[in-house]
Image 1: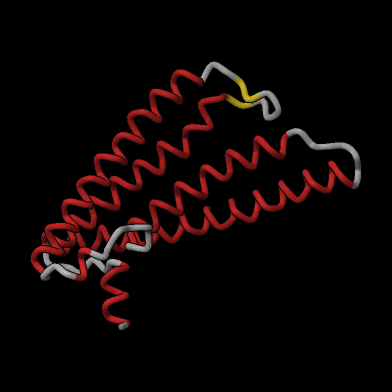
Image 2 (image 1 turned 90 degrees about the vertical axis):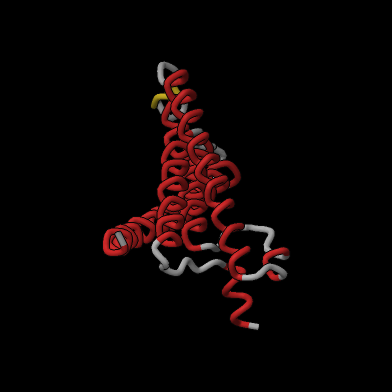
Length: 174
């Protein structure tokens, strides 16, 4: 089982690196699109209409992909003050509960995101000419990654492999 989890983690390392690269490209693209919109509006006096809709779609992707990778790496926002007071065993229980809650949340993102995508698929985003359901693909993908990464964290903990959390990094640094 330990070998399987180590191989799974190696694959998910690559997936997380890819998602962060995609998120980074998305952030740059959104910045370029918004800059073009401002330039078009104030310099050319001809506002490009596609830039705002495109930027909002791209923002959804880089936020949700980046958040999923942050969950995996333990660099997400969390309330870790209580964890400094707990012993190692209690910390592991708290981490496990946290991962289970994140799995439920990610599952909700996938389930409700699919419902929204199916209901809005027949519509069209006017300035882009693409299906309205495309707007929810980032939500579905981000939710699926949350579930996958949290299950990985549970598996790593179950087989005795370390799962580095931001609070633990802070404790080691101080």
